[in-house]
Length: 205
Image (cartoon, rainbow, N blue to C red; front, side):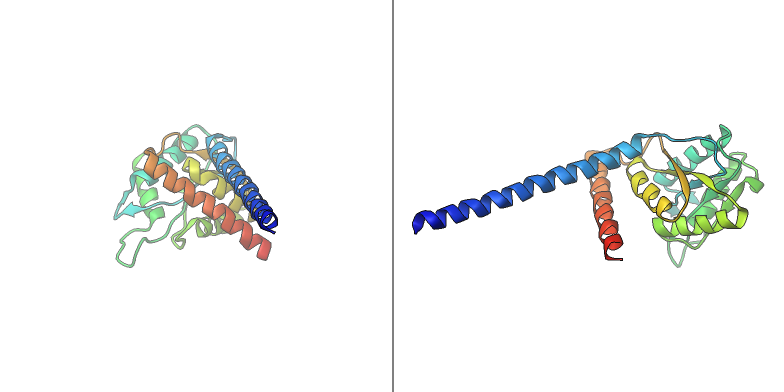
């Protein structure tokens, strides 16, 4: 009797251990995929460059947002696309400028012509950034775009873009403010969470 119960416990623990190992392997694979996507640069000739929004402090972009804007401008100057689409709405009820307006002001100061800039001021997150960008694309008859964001954010941005029917290429910022172990791992953990959340939402739908 005792040996039977002991064997059952061993079997249960063995099963739980295998599940745990498989879960760790899965999480490692997802994490590696997110990092790999962010390190690829697919920049090629496109109809527009979409710069995803990030925080702005009144009329000044945050360091993270500034890196995205500057990379978008570099791609534009290199001739990859004739249009820049800046996304991002108002950070709060007291904000004077939307994120996209801050980006537009920055670009104009760098000599980018106004005719080469499109903005939307309604979005508050990545999904809305892309929904509003696609609305502008549809209005202009644009098809292929380059998505600009931080490396660890790129996998989700591409996944969402393609789910919306956007022909998207990835070009992550060459430098990122998420450099320290604490900030990079927190950002990466967030992206792993969003990957699984989106997966479950899609399965449930």
